[in-house]
Each structure stands twice: as structure tokens, then as C-alpha cells.
Length: 327
Image (cartoon, rainbow, N blue to C red; front, side):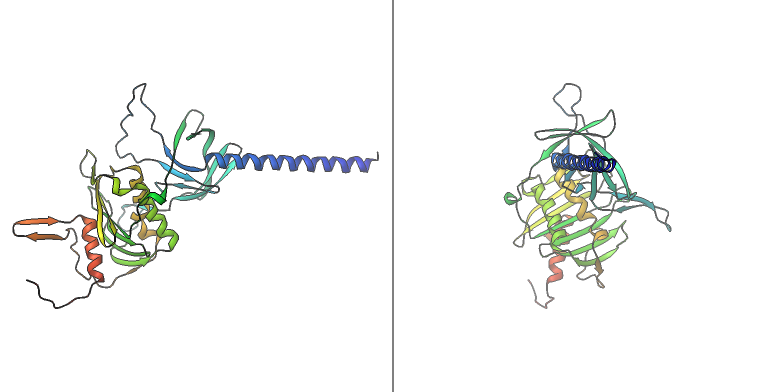
């Protein structure tokens, strides 16, 4: 065997081993992505050996995510903190919910939208049935339970209206209406850059994303009211329309609602930062800022919830003014 032949065989062997190694890495990467794929909700660990969960910390928001083959949707979203150059007040810019990710052996690395850098997120430990274990360092392991939704069995809405009130602080005061055709009406009343009335349109993907978020919450099966035990928080109200009728309104003080309801608030409450909206020149019909529409009869008063009040405004806006006289 000549020296040239030996060299060629060595090169061929190296190439074959390299191909096998690449195939093995690709196979391991595929297995890891399949293991972590799904809709997941963090499990709050039990305290000692009791059967009760420890009370969540004040202002705790539930962590959940959807992992697909090439991206991860963090249900609570990403935000970039900043400061207004004029007022000096703290600002918070919503950067969306979805990030790309890559794997390195058993490590999961995300493209952080805040820093625009690739950053280690978890190390895969195991997945047993519907329980996923991920480590964020050498001592801390987080468990997630798999979520399952069948959208075919959940109600379809024609319009969703979301409203938020003020709080003891700088909570945004807004109203948002999204219809099944993708049309959007928005009012920024306080603590947002987009003050006033605006309109716009969502494409089908963006509209379905928001509607399906609320459908997962299955609002028709939820309570009418949720409330935390502290004061000075904001109230969130959502109204759901089917066939021109209000079928449900949920008043949520302090984000005490179900996890799915809280997750649905995130994209709709930030729609003015993710969607091109055009300013409406005239505030017509009149909308009672800092107050809501009410119905009065004799000595009785029926106040509407904030989202119901904005729904009435959206209906009046589509109507024609007449000179009809009523008794």
C-alpha cells in the first residue's frame, strides 16, 4: 500500500466519521426538540409535605410557554425597560412573545429580544409523560405540566373588547375592540403614548392569535368577577360578543383571573405598539372619559362595565344619526 493510498484512506475515514458525528448530532437535536415541544405551564412546588400549594408571591404572574420546532412563545412576553427623555418617567416597551432558539447537546439557548444576544435558558433534564423538567443552573430544576386545548370545542366570538383602568401608579388606561374581520378600534386614555382614538386592521394570523388566546381561556365557563386581596390595583374588563349580543363580561381586579385569561391580556393590551393604527380625527360619538355610559330609569342607575361602555361606543360609531323623536 503506497503512502498516497494510506493518506486517501485516512481522509476518507475522517470524512465518514465526521458524517456519522453530524448525523448523530442532528438525531439528538431532533429528539430534544420533540421532547420539549408542546404547551407548558410551570408547576408551583408544594410546600413541605402538605397537600396545599404555597401562596404565590404578591403580583405573581403565571409562567407558561409554547415550544415548537424552531421557536418558543413565552406567554408573559418580553419588555425593554427605559426612561422617557422628557418626563424622566420609567417606560416599558413590549417586544412580543415569540423568540427563536437553538440547541447544543442538552442545552436550550434563546435569542433574547431585549439584548439581541443568544443566551442560555435551560438544560433539558427529562420528560416523563406530561411532565417536563428543565434546569436553569446546577441547583435549580423547574417542572412544567403539559397543557391541552381542543379549539374545536371552544366558543367562537364575533368581537372581543378589552379595557383597563388606572391604578395607584402608571397603569395604562386603554380600550381595545377587535372584530372577527380584523378591524381594531383603540382608545388611549392615560399612561400610553398613543392618546386618543385610533383604528386599524389585523391580518388573519394576528387576529386569530388574539382570539384563540381568549378561546383557550374558555370565558363562558369562568366567573364574572375576580379580585385580589390588596388595594390600589387596576381593573381589567373583557366583553365577548356573539351574534350582536353580549354573552359574557368578566371584571378582573388585579389580574386574579385564570392563567389563560392573564396570558390572553398580554397581546391585546399591547396591540397599539405592535399594529399600525391611524388616528381618528374626531371623537364621535362622544365617549365619557374617566366615566362609563350608564342607563337611568326613575331613581335607578345601571352603570356599564368599562369594556361594555366601549362596546356601546363602537356600535354607536357604526350607526347613522337621525332626527327620530322618542317618548
